[in-house]
Image (cartoon, rainbow, N blue to C red):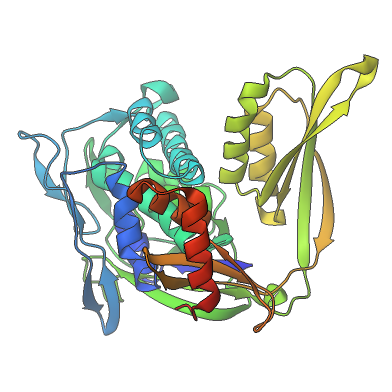
Length: 407
């Protein structure tokens, strides 16, 4: 199991998370291609190497010059230029995401982050989620930051995102509604139930966007036992007494690396009153909530009624999120849960050069006898871009993957 551990050494912002994943090896080109399907134009993406208090890091350089000609520009807490004009609702953001070319999992993860943001804003302002208007977090750069993180998690084959306690500074923060206490109310709402640590800095150390990303897609906890594969530092623009960086450490959990297996939960519900058309979205939402696998089994219930047993496999840390998704996205009134153990082959991911360019591949098994499987999303993208049959692309890429060493 591949784990990404996020340490908020000098805070966290949406672009700092993106930069940390870039620094850890996420492919810039793949991320930009995905983001161009969300918002095709009107922004630039120019990552650069910088140094923060002696630590070499990557600055994301994702900039939106302005959404409207009369919009007022300002610098947000991570140093990026944004505007304060466009006030999007949750429906506006979800429409942008749904119309994008992101994968179903990436779309649902991005949408889930914004649903969490909308719920937090609604509690703060005493309004309905549907009526909530996003200010800073509704800007195009924030939407792209969230989407980019979801793309990076897939690109780096991250199974679990875990994060350190959130640092909290003091003083007040200037926002669209005026001067707010630190952390701003929406951020404070998102951090309910999560560990925080007090830092002697008169600054907003964790932006609302970063708080939403990490509390929606991640789990709290100490640094896990890992065989470390990559380390990345994402830079902000502030100059504190400590490095203004977010560090992400990526590696294989030691239990998985040893091939000794791990513990999983199986969640199930018997359903006899739901339209078959609704299962497609329900399955997408379960995967987005953290399910590792989802399947449907035809069964017969009481009084001879034909029905479906909906099952999902998840890690214990994702049990609640997957259970809530199953309850919310289906007509079931309850979810059964049982714990099981599984044995795993050693797994790794690399990139191989093919006649169509770089393609991600997954390997499972010991060196010398590993099974090699090209990433389906890459195969599909190539087939669409080049107008080729998927079977032909698969054949060519599989041959290159079988002969390539990877990187």
